[in-house]
Length: 476
Image (cartoon, rainbow, N blue to C red; front, side):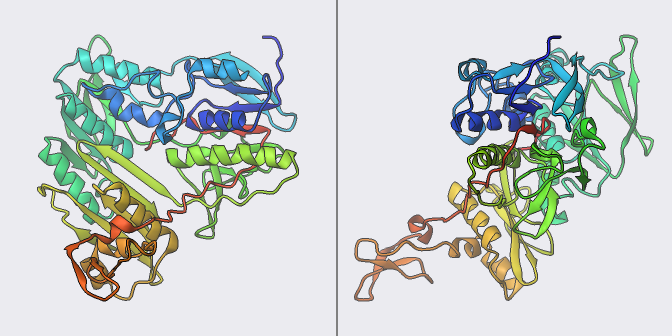
């Protein structure tokens, strides 16, 4: 292969790569200066769709419908867009060795799809495998599916397979689903809801083997406790580790990722890491963390590119001040979480799986302050409210009172934006009050007049010449 050189190289073709490319274009990158090297055969796309609408029997998502950057409400970047901007998309190509000190990609090899020993076992990391799963769903219509894992992906995949009329079993070793985020109380709702949908939930054990037939297709899943589950399809949704091995012993690592500063700069000059490969300083909490979510992948990529150009122009930029944010959608459920899930938790609302509204949430309290908030089935305004309290961390004097107030606590911390038609609100009752002090008849919800200063801060950006991007941000 002929040697090629670029001023900027993005390693990996996932969500972060697409958002970085858009920011490069916004910053005025010149044609021929930027290349994206991806082992996938398609331009960057919104990976969370693979465990959601991509598998739905109706209203199915397909490319080019979910290329980046539609996931954040932006323009869809089709392959032609990269051509128009002079950005080189080097696809179906896997980097097997890189020399960061000399900023050289040493060897390129054709990408070979990594298969499992048995047919119809899927890991759903890339769109090619999602396509194979869709084919298997059609071929094994109304069959049996086993989902290995009870995290984000396991929950979303279980819902998607059940919507496709499969008999679904979900297996995971933890005492409840989503243990890294959910409390036992939150998990009880989702486990009950899924059970009501006909999904079998098997906790406290793991898959230790797979049976196959003469055609090499999976037929069953053997569990550590001796249970054998029949299976026409198996999907492993246990997540994955960040792909850092390519740069082993070349960059400093920490907490399972590549260590960066607040601008995502690594220990090697002009090399930056973004998305879930980066372990970065979390300004809000005063510690370093690695975040596995598409929201961070998008924002960290944009920050990195802005910082590159600021550095080249001799300008300074603000630090990355990220508020952790996670969300998921399945069946008719939709939850959002902001902040940190540490300290004591307070559940509020109706968390019964049989509830017709399933509107409930939770706060996390540490050192007398709310540091995290979760809400199921919130309105856009309510979700902004829980983000607000997670950011400002208001004090709490009584956990019982907080539980009683529930969502009202978050809504009450939103600022009122002044006079409205010569009337103002009684903050205690939510009624309009005239200047003379008499209450208007119609109650008015305070939140209808609130402006959420959500601090959707544009993450500070960082300089970059060589960007290591995540390609595995399926969560979101």
